[in-house]
Length: 89
Image (cartoon, rainbow, N blue to C red; front, side, top):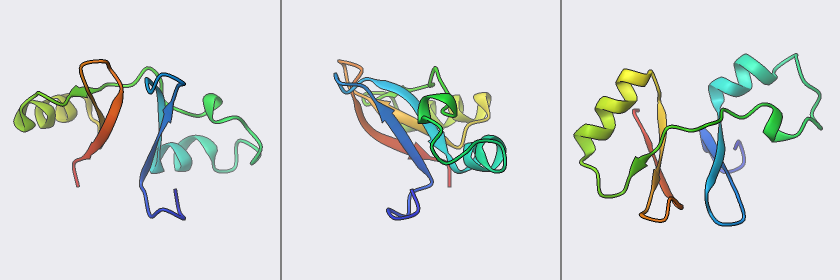
């Protein structure tokens, strides 16, 4: 995440489906000082993940993010494959 200047990373399965998400907040709250560096990402990622469809209106996505208290939400296509990520900031 640091190398790519990203504030979140999606954990993607072999069929491009979203398995989980790791955010800066996950790193701070769950990982720092609690898990060794070799801990598998599946143990610290947030799952299941709230997603928005690529055909949804932006204001619906923002409303869902605010209701759920999320700063990041993956965008999926009709096959539920990841196509992007929305960030409130």
